[in-house]
Amino acid sequence: MTALIETCDLAKTYVMGDQRVRALRRASLSIARGDFAAVMGPSGSGKSTFMNLLGCLDTPSKGDYVLDGQSVAGLSPDQLAALRNRKIGFVFQSFNLLPRSTALANVCLPMVYAGAARAQREAKAKAALETVGLGDRMDHRPAQLSGGQQQRVAIARALVNDPALLLADEPTGALDSRTSLEIMALFQRLNRDSQTVVIVTHEPDVAAFASRVIRFRDGKVVDDRRQEPNDAAAELAALIAGARRHEDAA
Ligand SMILES: Nc1ncnc2c1ncn2[C@@H]1O[C@H](COP(=O)(O)OP(=O)(O)OP(=O)(O)O)[C@@H](O)[C@H]1O
Ligand SMILES: [Mg+2]
Image (cartoon, rainbow, N blue to C red; front, side, top):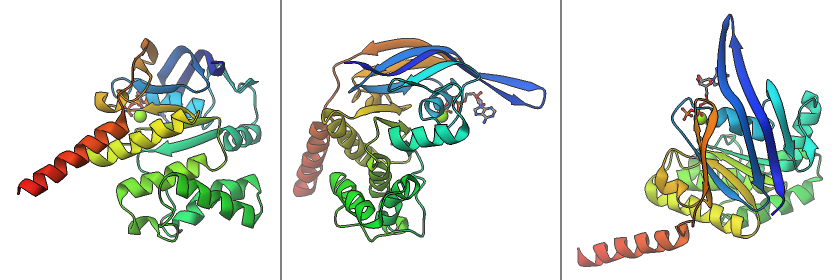
């Protein structure tokens, strides 16, 4: 595997008035193409700060970040936005969908920014929604979808420009355990199809589906290890079978 992401002594200090918060201190990491990493650590340890830097949503105070061979330090805000649009898909805990737009329109949005023609946008958005199992919900607005379905729309939107990197900050934080399993099974399937995935999670059960766990504390990487991942689809099937047996017995 070749490195998709290389960070070297990445640091971020937030300045608020005369107060300085060192959210990230010298984080050096390499993430290979095709990897599936989970980022863990206590609240305030710099996980979201790190993800926002990886996702080109923010710029580092110090250090460098090379994404797919391109150095991010020194890019103008416009160049950074263009790189983000081309290379990154971002999924948030709270879905961040436009409430008045249909699933299809939400998924089309990143391609509007990328300047694609309408027919092409719709074809790609439909394909992305089918990939996440929502081919029959394209005309639903977010309020007409379950939490797990809304998150799948957000994942389709993140995937629609074929990003090199899929980032997700606590993607299962707002979901019940069965729906979390569905979402993790989807991430595992995408990863098997060669998608590079990095997620933040507080839950060890969720991190167990990644191939690598990176731990932060006080803005630093304190642990980084590979593991044999659990199979989310198998756990989901077992959960569904168990629920059925329970119903049959009742
Ligand atoms: N925009 C900001 N301005 C000032 N300080 C910030 C900002 N964003 C984060 N911080 C501070 O930086 C530190 C790291 O925050 P970060 O959001 O990266 O933590 P986290 O590991 O994601 O925590 P959580 O698990 O609670 O989401 C915290 O002390 C936080 O208060
Ligand atoms: Mg966070």
